[in-house]
Length: 320
Length: 247
Image (cartoon, rainbow over all chains, first blue to last red; front, side, top):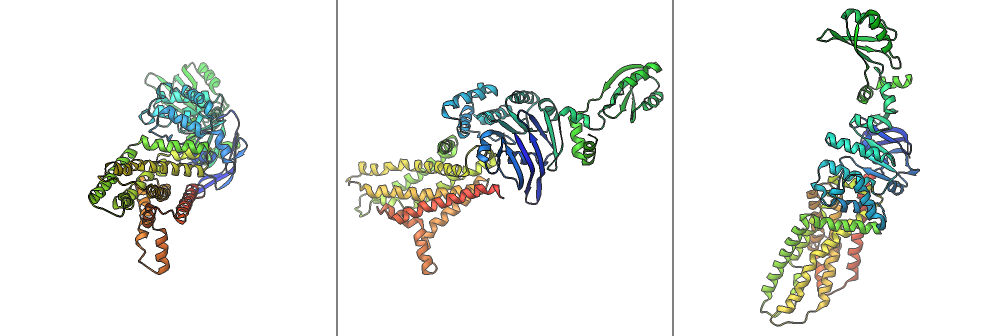
């Protein structure tokens, strides 16, 4: 659906996107992550044919975004950052106008507008003026606009920014539903959102892709993927020594609890499950084991570890 | 073509959805109404060899209206879209830059024409309520309106270009006003500089053109001058809008 090859964009003196290459297949929901200024919005603007790249090639649905930009624009629904809307128009009026502009024939316009109003939960506010709507509703109007011409590809630049948790949940659900019929490329800072909605995550930093995989695989990637937490009653020093001697264990940290239990965090490499060893060790030493769980690495940890220092990220690529 | 129509409708709707349209319309009517009334009072009870309407086109109030109204009409066209960011949703819709520029121009030009609609009643009023009604010579009146539209549309295109240069509406209005004022005041410069420059200013200064139109002269050279100047300015505007692609 999207093929990007060696895309570079330079603004006066600043390289926003640096030799970026990636592909998005039809039907995927791809989360585009990266710190502020990593080049996410720039890439999305190039893909939506708002501005061309300095060099490189990008195609959407087989059409070149520079030379066949109108064909590309017909096939994408783009929701820019901050979701700009004409605030003085009524919701249904705005969607009808956008449908006309995007070439929906007048015979189908009413049906299309009604459908997106329905799908985005805007039925009750169709007659309201956009400027009087809450942020959550405006966001849905933006989504409805990107959907109104039934595009193959949705490009959503931070669709949940500035929403409250309930609204985020609603929009997330909406995006998930949309993913059944459309290919979606979305950027966001809210990482749990990506974990829950996206089939693939692409992390870019300083204009380059530094990681691209499913959220599960990404969380396995980083160090600490095999970290286990255990709460044990017993002698602190013994526990530390015994657990540290287990095969594959790199490091153990112990915190004393206030009820006689200690909380041990055992660091082991990924794909080396030390939980069984810990249980056996506890049984042999007659420790009371209250909790034994794997510490689930969040995407946030991945994000921080990859984008803050670039070296570990490339090391992990080699390991992979 | 249908997209041009869609955008044009949206531009006109945008005027009437904001208070600016009503403010401009009322101010413009008050200004022209006062001007017209003062002319009628000045002419009252005297015999003249020129008609009130002929003086009206080219009067002080007429030009103040032209010079002030047009930048206010055009200032929001691109500047507002840029400030709101809607320029992105607009330009990523499957429409070409040419269509966007022309639809904005046509929208503003339509609104400009609407501003003048109420003044059509002036000739009728004169005829109806003058003590000794003289039959109106419709030729010069029609020509005066044609001239006003030609000059006005050219000014609208200048204002549109000014708006495409910035995302601040006030700055757009000021640039627009300056460009329009230059075109207007060139008409006063016919006594300055070398002869060729004087005649050049004479050709392009707006003030004489409107006066001649209101006398009923249809000078094709001037019609062509204004149409081609308008098209040229719109072409420049289109290039400015496109410049986001190569800046």
